[in-house]
Image (cartoon, rainbow, N blue to C red; front, side, top):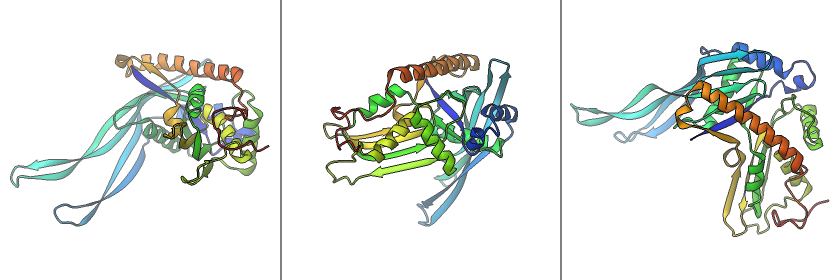
Amino acid sequence: MTILYYSKVNVNSNIFSVYDKQISISEIMNLIYNALDDKKEYVKKDIRNFKDNDTGESRTIESQEIYNFSELIKFKDVNEMYIMGKLVRRYPIHGESFDDKTRKSIPIVHENNATSIPFYFDLHSEVITFHVRNKFGYKQFNEAFRNLLDEFIYDVGFEVFLLNDPFKVYERLEMLQKVRKIRSTIIPPNANEEALEDLFNRETEELKQSNITKKTSIFETHKKNDKGINIKARMVKHTLDISKVYIERGYGKLEVEGETADGTHFRYDSEKDSYYNTSIEEEHKDNMEKLKDAAKRGIYSFFSKMKINKENINHSSFIKDKGNKNFINGDIDE
């Protein structure tokens, strides 16, 4: 079986214009639908410094990766709108060639080596479904997809985050006993969902008033501090509560470092440890019709999970009451 990943495409630079009804998410998705083709490219350059073993001199090599869409299929009617195709990564491979005359190995670069990932992009839910390849992971995919969207739609900036499974978020974070570091990143949500929690809406309004399109909060305590961060203190608790609501819906990410009850070092990364996923048969992973069917089922299942999670779990806080054995360091700051 092959794992399928799900990423949320978020309108970022113009999101407050969406809130003010100057433009809608559906209008922006239609712009994407009409604009995407296999012509535009996103070029990512990289500079590498190394020491020449023969001469001892420092040398610099500039390489680049090129990303583009290919084999696009578009479909739109009153019930659905989607784009299927491949995201192609072209990149150089550094290797060696053996010279028969000098009997030495010579460094060479194989240019234009390529690998591709098939995807299904549902423009109604703004969710992309894909799997990964060797040397083409989900971070590269999300970064490339985001930058290509920015290339196609000049006056709109985007963010792309993996969707998170809310049940996995709880499962992982309940393992923590002592917290050393918290890093939370959130962005204003696409404004096409039902009314959400007051906490979610209040934070979104504050971002809008401040004209902030990405907010990162970092809390740390020294490793020799035996108490760890007091996550029940109002400031920290508020940040964690906000993060939970946002990352569940694909509007950010959360990283937490600390220790479990037995003193084992623990690191939680929402993108690595609680991403939402389904699977597809290995022999079907590159069949676009099979991928489309699996993606539709997966997207439906995700939103069903979100509905169940909203009905059955108190969204008010990661932090439970004072008697909770999880997150025990610190007292509640009322």
